[in-house]
Length: 305
Image 1 (spheres, rainbow, N blue to C red):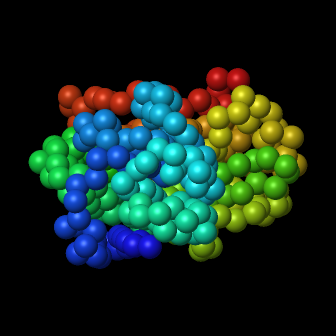
Image 2: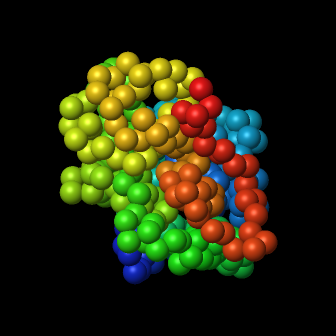
């Protein structure tokens, strides 16, 4: 089996030459929502034969056959589509399934990334090169740069008070089962919070962390972000002991955001970070003429209950 694992590091892409010089794929099974978004934005979606369950944007992706969850790809489902390439994100698997698919002669390409804006840009260009459409990759990067320039402008023009004392943010993956899971460093949530000009209150810890209500109260963040689309999210928070005493809760600075939109690290992520900045900061000045070009998440907040 030929498996190419591509490690995206902050300043370069380590590529295997055979992955770059191989025949341009025409039948691609995708295991990863950001990859599906990128292929769509490159205008090459006609090459997609199937997607995983995290590939839900744009809406048209629902028409494709499903491979299963990105971490639990169906071997039979993938092979039934007769792909010449399975292109996946770093969490695609399980390894045993990938080996089985590869043993039939399907090329496997797994993109490993560290969830930074730099590696997002590199991922776009790698996929564009893989598909033989580098010019389209350049155009997509230029479009994403509009949001990145707006983000840089906003942070540069923040009030001095926000620059000197950035908002302290607690980012929850989930609040379910009475054991909230929050973001430390080395997570996509940590990256977007920092890119939005704020401080992750759990930056001293690595990965996703289970928090007791008592320890969460001690953090006392200015803003809470919850990656959850369930309608009862705020009810869940009301039922968690001590949370009502948090500064963010008392000030109704609790917001829900679609995780794929913000943390997917696809073409929409730069805009999502700009939108995050507009709710984290009381004043997040955007350049004249800047407009959101993707459907906005329009972060629901506790104020709307």
